[in-house]
Structures are given as C-alpha cells and as structure tokens.
Image (cartoon, one colour):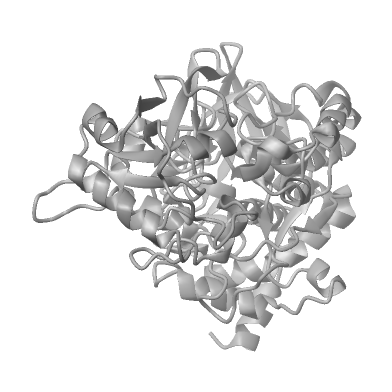
Length: 565
C-alpha cells in the first residue's frame, strides 16, 4: 500500500464519510451512535446526493411494518427473490447480508433519528407473479412527509429533486389515479406541502438523515472535492481534498467511508467500465467515479454486473444547474395507452409497460450485422395521448416543442420525417391496435406485469391500463438519447459483509469502507427492483459505521446457519 502521509492535518474525526447521500449520512450517524466521532465531506454545495433525486422507495423484505399490517413476509423469502432474479451474476452471501440487515437498519434509524416510514400500499414487487417469493405489497416503503424547516440554516443547503414531485407521497399520487391522470389531480395538498416545505419521496428521506446528523453535531463540510486517499503504508488513514482552491487534509482515526454514488458523468468510465455508449445523465455533474480513482490507488477490486442503458429526452431550456442540461427519463410513461416504442425499422422491441424489458434491449447487438438494431428509438404517440397524459414535464394538451417531437398528420409522413421504415411502422401500429381490443400482447407481454400497470399505466383505462390504440392524428415521434442509470452503476468496489473495501486478493483494505452505489452490485446481481438502491445505501452505511466504530454486526453468521448456504 502507498505511504503518502502529509506533514499536517486540517480536520480530524474517527470516521470520515465522503458523500452526503443516504450511505454517507447513515455511516456517520451510526459511527457516532456507537461511540466514534464522524464528519461528512460533500463535493457540491448541497447535501443529500443522489438519494434526494430519487422516488425515495426503500425495498425491505420482512420489515416490521409488514408484520404490523398483517402482511406475511420474511428475509428468507426476500433472499430467494433476489437469488432467483440475480441470474447467477451476484454473490449469495452478499445478497443474504443485505436482506438480513435491511430490516434491522430501518428499525435502527426509526429509533435513532426519528425516521418515519410507511408501506406503499398496493405497490407490488417488480416481478410479482413470476416467483412465489414476490409480494403484492409490503416490501416497498417510503417516508412520511418531512418538515424541512427543522433543518434551520441547512434547509436551503439540502438538495431537492428536479425529477419527481417531492410534495406528494406515492399514496397521494396513486389515490388520484397515478401520474397518468395528472390532468384531473387536485394539487391543493401539494401546494400546502411546498408552502410549508414538507418534503416527500427521496427529498424527504434524505432530510431525516440530514436532521439526524445535525442533532448529533456531526460536521458536514460542503464544497470539498476529495481527490485522494491518504495511507501510512498499511492502512487508509485519511483523505486529501480541495476547498476554495486550497488543499485540505482530513485525518480518519478509524476509517474512511466512500459513498459518492457512481461514475456516470465520466464518459471514459461510462464506456470502459460501464459499456454505455454516448450516454447522457440525469444526475449532478460531480458524480464522476471518484471512488474508483481513489480506491484503485490502494488496490481495491472493481466488479460489475449486467448493465442497463436508460433513455431520455430534453425539453429546451430546462437545466439541471447552470449550463447543465436536464434530461428526462420516460420510464413511467412508455407504457401509457396510445403510446409505443419502436426502432428505425418501425418495429416494437419490448414490453413498454415494464422498463426493464425495454432498457435491456437498447444495447442489444445483432452479431450478424454488427449493429444495435434497437437504437436509435422513438416513442410514437397520437393525439389521444397528448390530450390525456403527460409526457414528462409536458402536460396534457400542451404543445410538444418541435425540438422534442416530430409531428405529422399521418403515420406514413411521420416515419418518413424521422427516417424510419414506413411500412414497418404502419404494420406495427396496426398490430398494436388489434392487441388493444383484448388487452393482450402476444409479442412482448405488454400489460402483463402488475408493477407496470401500477406505475406506468392508466388505472382508469378499460380492458388494460397499458393499452389504447394509436389512431388519431396528428401523430408524434420523440427521439431518445441514451442515459446512464441514475447513479445505479453496473460497476463498483467489492466489499465484505461489513462494507470494508476488498483488494484483488479478496482481503479487506484496512481503514477503507464503501457504501451505496459506490459498492459493486454483487448483492443484487442482474436483479433490479425499485427501492433496492436506497436500501443498499442505508444498510451499507449502517454496517460500515458499526464496524469502523468497533461494534460490527454479527447477524450474517446466524442467517447462514439458518438458511444453510
């Protein structure tokens, strides 16, 4: 290991957490509560990280809230669910470690910081019905609205999401018919919450953790760009960063926790580590793989699982921050009635109502022609869709900017305008319209996944929430760009059961921990489920904080013995 000790230290704590999302804040709070001092270093001017951008869902099998509601579940069932979906790309001990500790983590933070969670009612597991270990509801949790005024001076320095309506809970949204029916919503409650600054979803979730850090007097330093790990030849003992153009050396007496999310704002890493071509991003530009650069210098091992490329579009004039475009992800509206997704041949290529089906197909390579047959791709929708449903921030009835969508009176004109096969589109729409009569899709199973109907359909639509014919002009074609995966990267740092970073010899690197999306997703493998990332971040932070403070969890040993792996 390197030896690059500085001649002085500017700051010092037992546990130094790099990144202020759920993982970093959870680690700092846990370490503090177990007898160690902690501080948080954040690169941007706001705390909250990618957690604040999210829908705030936390996937926890066998949680205590299920038991209180009479929902039968267990961590054993949750383990089998992940094991089935991982397709052999994960590590079973890591999967077990996550599901065993997730429920304990939720209980811990409820008691420690007053985190208030509730079940998202009627929200099924992604793969409900595919396996006996899936549930119709209970595992997906969200926080109760958080009063951000209690943050004091940090109220304005705690990040909120530009992507989701953080003034409403899932229950609020779906009690009004879901986002598909935004045209008929009553926005009174949302207006009241925004006026009071009561935050929901990911912006609310991270608020609880920021408040937990403030209550403990845990220093949170913003504007600190951590660039290098400091080691003494045997252990990681601190970090070097810059703040306001000056070097800053921070000593970590017991450990450094890297919780800086992914690498998707780094085009080189996207291509060489993540295998994503020309991908844009919906998250803050500072998320550029700092954990890979820093941990690599002390011999940390990188691992990856199958990647998923998302897609998105940009509305002219929208910016994430000054000069940085704001990209919109169509995950929740690809499967709405009167809308399909097609490739340049004018053909559908997946189940639009279940984004996992679509996004795996984007980067499929045709070995015979050495091409990506499904990219570029377009959303095709008719005037019924524009009259009834939102398209990202473009509300029903609002004109589609010409920079977003091509428009034509006929499908044939539309195909020709965007360079798509005319006959192919004509036939695809005819086939799809016939499927709308029965609500069954013999090609790709659209409308057959319960989660897709819940999240991406119109529950008031007859026959099937995900079906409605494309037949009323004018017609629209929205061209999509590739997007990276919202901070949920395919690759990260390998870690053990205590979230200690591992070397290429699978040995813990003394003094170095990782959390959240900085950790290789071997605890999920090829599986993806809403709420897994937030659950991982909180759980990793909890485990890292305990171990660094000298109070490691011993739950895994009992779980191994019980389940027999």
